[in-house]
Length: 85
Image (cartoon, rainbow, N blue to C red; front, side):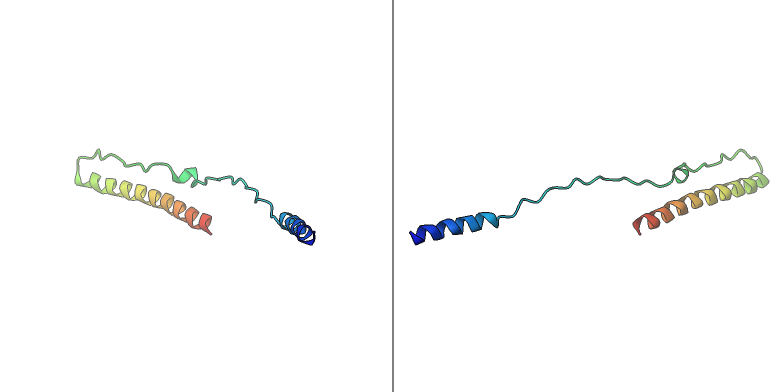
């Protein structure tokens, strides 16, 4: 009789200690993208000159466009560093 009573108590104790299964939490994924101003493609001016002087003007136009593209790239790099920190 005592053995049966002990078994019943043990079963009650063991079932009451059973932990609940963990609940799953949903995770929302937020996709970040760089600023739209940095995603504009770079413009390459077309050379329409006929003389050596025109090639110098064309070189200045290329340099200006290269500087604009570098600023856009720097903006993306800054955005990446800022979003990772």
